[in-house]
Length: 283
Length: 283
Image (cartoon, rainbow over all chains, first blue to last red; front, side, top):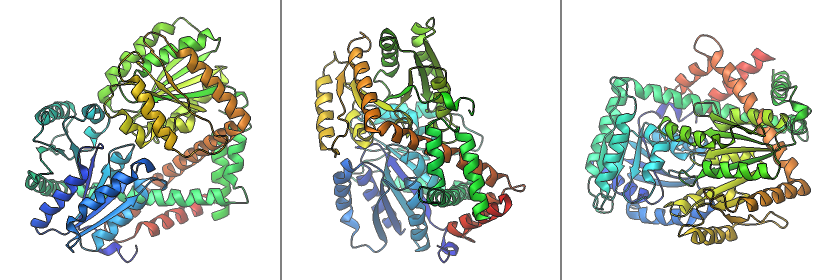
């Protein structure tokens, strides 16, 4: 990582997230093809934060993406994040950094929008695409709950189906209610048909526009510094947790937790004791 | 908190979670009434981890719960967790502890199952109820993604509607695929109509059975020790984050993050530097 650091920062990191069934892998596939037509090298990280139950479907997705298997301007890697400390936030930044240093112009991080993964992906990307589709039941309900705060581009897939325009109108209505600062980015809402490879050219154009906006506004550096801060914190916290669990046979933390569970100690004093014990041990 | 500690550990902490629209507040209301009939004092924490967009609906929910306003065996408190560091995990344990020490027999923590809140609630509860309803579109899809790992009781609300039996069958099918250790709890799947106050007696019975199971198997102490460990860790980590952000005018962390974002430093060396600086400063 020390050797890679000077070579990082050139790629545009694009997050792509959406509920199960909106067509994420088909869209990733079509978007990769469009970016290749524009001459960009593309690294894809397909991150699966879900439970073992969907393992099979994810594998199927990967097989479909073998369209690009012969193109050395494309690198595709599936990653499981389940069970990793911190989910996406732990292993993904390292993989992004490697692809960035390897010279890919775009690093596309695809993840299914369940749990906290969609928020985590937005924290790691320069530009986040939220993918929607008509007929997803409570798609827009889900949208209310979180995706309105994370999307830089909204893309409605399956544009040939009934209801695509309605999804776009609903979304536009909800976005218009959100507060916007002067000079803030106005999120475009695009329609595509990933299966027919229609509309992806516009997505590539808007990704470029968003990258320019981030650079010119200073937001790119702010986002990347914030991301670096979270990553450094996460690594430091993970190291401390390891130390806390490690001291003695059962660990200082385990003993303190037992006292708290039994009512002999409150958690604030326990936390103070933990920090005091380790500050001494490490100073 | 130090004064409360000796008085804690008596209440059964019950988490109740489900997607928007399954009838959480109606079910909470009906369950509180049923627990009161059984002579139990009930504290309710309605935690809202969502975005500002659903603020109105949540307020409406609270108003419906004023059925119990005159009953001093019931305490109801809405809490917003959005923006709090760590979401639910930060403020909820403290509120649970206060209600426990105040002598409530059951502390019911209700939260909408979006983002990571359903996993967090399960980590804090002794017994977790996952609420489902027919006609929720991709309800079972969502179920696959996470709730199969957190439910101790599954409750299908709106049992009078078409599809309730199908939801139960689907769920039973999925649960039967999960690995079970010998002697593990077999999650019941109950049907209720919260609006008609039907079936809640069975929920109360099963909650009692689960509490007995937890005690007798030793799982209650294990869960509570694990919870205490997470809480102590969270408090210690929050305190460290405060210190890391605080040193000097811009903070040691901010400077390190700027170096990482600019490619001058890798995040692992930055984390080491952060820990070294603070071990010295605090030792």
